[in-house]
Amino acid sequence: AALAVPDGGSPLLEIGSYHGRSTCILARGLRPGERLHVFDPFDLGVEEQYGDAPTVARLMANLHSVLPGLDDAQIVTYRSASEHLRLEPAQRFRFVHVDGAHAHAVCLQDLRLSAIHLLPFGVIAVDDYAYPQYPGVTFAVRDFLTEHPHYEVLADLNRHGAGGRKLYLTSRA
Image 1 (spheres, rainbow, N blue to C red):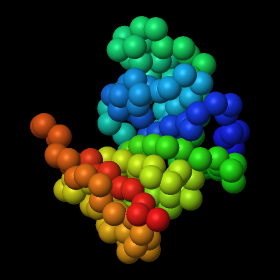
Image 2 (spheres, rainbow, N blue to C red):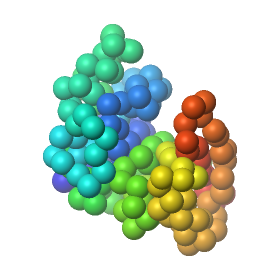
Image 3 (cartoon, helix red, strand yellow):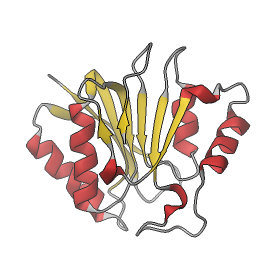
Image 4 (cartoon, rainbow, N blue to C red):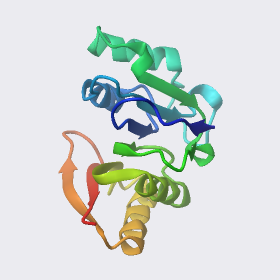
């Protein structure tokens, strides 16, 4: 599946939403005319299962519980693993949230794809960094930063009660 370049604004991308806690935060930051593209396998059955499979309907219900006036047209969902994500060459995002598969190779692929399509001074947020249960994420970030020396850590935030951290990356170039 390829994303078309939407009209108006620089869209947001989320790779992996589960039930949409981060999606709600991202949707709150949408500007008029912008779209939030959400890529998640939802109920397709993937290697990493957390008990209750997410669905697009549940995601949208969660979004509307937090943002009752949200225009559904601003949320574009893709029911697929990130390995199948193909973006139009001209597609650019001002913010990308990476919280897909936690395996090293997949996370590194998600980071590389995000960097190719990030606007100058855009931000990539990586979830579950330094989470002992998901070392692949930490190693993927390390390898990404080695491959892309013009990227730097903008912020490294610990979340209350979370085992991992959110790491925010941006390009100096």
